Structure formats: structure tokens, C-alpha cells
Length: 362
Image (cartoon, rainbow, N blue to C red; front, side, top):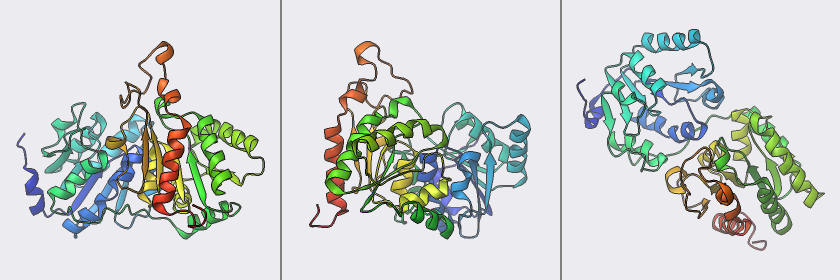
């Protein structure tokens, strides 16, 4: 296969572009800033995005996306074949695989596009399906910077990295009504994460919430996906036990991604694990206090000095293991080692840096 130098992408004049980034939520959010770049470099091109069915709601009606091609990870072979036929029929000129897995490599190859771009992080053989690799895009590069290497190659590194997400007035109004019972600043807490090794204990979240309410009169909003409802319930229960008259709403399992986005836009501060909601909050401009256990805050955290990212200090930190590799007393030692005091200190620092509280209350 003849390789195409990345620098030649500047001179392309594609009519149709396909961006392949089906998942996960945080990765999708961090890819959205590339849309204005592609429009700036290729103003006459139509842009399609291959997106996982569970995340499609987030990108619906996006002003810079002409078409969403839905990938159903749990769908039938027939649905998979239908997607591949769609990809072939669109006659894309330029395909960008930001996922770099076997399934996205198959999608990339199915397009038959003349120019097929990938990152150095490509694995499972997906690099064989591309003919152009973005340089300096290895796994050692922070995810947000890795994606932005494409903008740099296209000569658009000075473009605004704004995460443009379309939220309708109905979602905004719903979020405001949902939060209307909360007085004072709003702290949204997302205690979930896809991996157990990313989840800081619920009782520690409850203690930070208690201090936020007692010392700064925060109202509390708890969010989570449908599979995190049973994790969010004990958090609500513990907060209410400690502060019976707390202003609190729990919308876990009851929001679309657009509604979650609207909630986060109305939020003053987000407290969460390394997760998709963390990147969604950062993307809409909400300051984040992020907790990092098995992942690295530099490689996986959001950019910007408005956030405070707290990491464990155990020897196996940032191992990126979905299950704890340690046994005995060392099993999930990171959950014990990362104490409330360190997270509370980061919380206070985030409050002060972003001037969230009135000067006489800080």
C-alpha cells in the first residue's frame, strides 16, 4: 500500500468526509473540536460521523455534521452489513479513523476512500487499513492533544478548540426547571465510571458533598447513566443522612445526553471520576474536580488550568487496568490512599481559581 504523507492533506479538495469515532463518550467529546477545523480547511465538503447508537443523541442536529451513520455495537450481523454498505455507497474522498480498532479499520476499508487517515495509536491491525498516519500521535500524547495533531497537520493549530454541542431550548429549560429547587451554587456529582478501578468510593463523595453544603451552601445534583442508578442511590442516601434538609436532585438514569449536557451547562462545578461526563462538563466550560486512580491525569484529563485533577499515589497508579492487578491488602489500595482531604483541597482551589463563590463567601 502506497503511503500518503500527512502534509499532503492540506492540498486535498474532498467532497465528502467521514469521521469515524463511535465511542466512548469522553473520546467523542474530545473529537468534536475537530469539526470546525475540517469545515475551515474543506469548506465545501460534507461531513459524516460514524457514531455508536448510545451516543448519537449528543451529536444530533449538530450544525457542522451533515449525516450521522449509526453503529450498533450490540446489533445483528445484518445491521453491521447495512452500515458497511452505507459507508461504501457514500463515496467518501477522505476518511479519518480516530478510534483505531479492528471494527473501525473494517469500516475505514469498506469506504473505499482514496485517502484514509489514522493515528499512531491504531491497534488490532487497523493501521493496515489506512494509508496516512498523523505523526506524533502516540499513546504518550494526551488524548486531547493527540486529536489536535490533525488540526496542526492541516495548518489550523490556531483555530478555536471550542467544543460545540447543540442543545435545544427544550433541554435547557428542562435543566433549569430540574435545578430550580437548588439554592446557591450547583455542584454536580457523577460517581460512576465504566471501570471499577476508576470509581472513588461513594462514601468519600458524600463527605465532599457534605462539606460543600455546610461550608459553601452548594445545592447538589447527582447524575449517572442507566447502569449507574444503583451506584447513585447510596450516594443520595448518605448525603441526606448527613444533611437531612439538603437541597438535592438525583437525575441518574433519567437524562438523555443532550439533557445531561444542559445540566452541566447550568452547573457551577463538577466532581467526578475520570469518565465521559467529566469531558462533557469540561467541554461545555464547567470547571471540573476530577479523580484519577487507574488512569493518568495528564494523558486522559481535560486541558485547561480551570480544572483540578487529583491522582492517587500508589505504585500501580495509571496502570489503565480495568480490574485491580493487586491482591491482599494492596487490592484497590488506591481507593483508600486517595483521601477526602486531598480532594477537598483541590475542590477549594478550584472554587477560588474560578471565583465561583462571591468574594465575601470565599
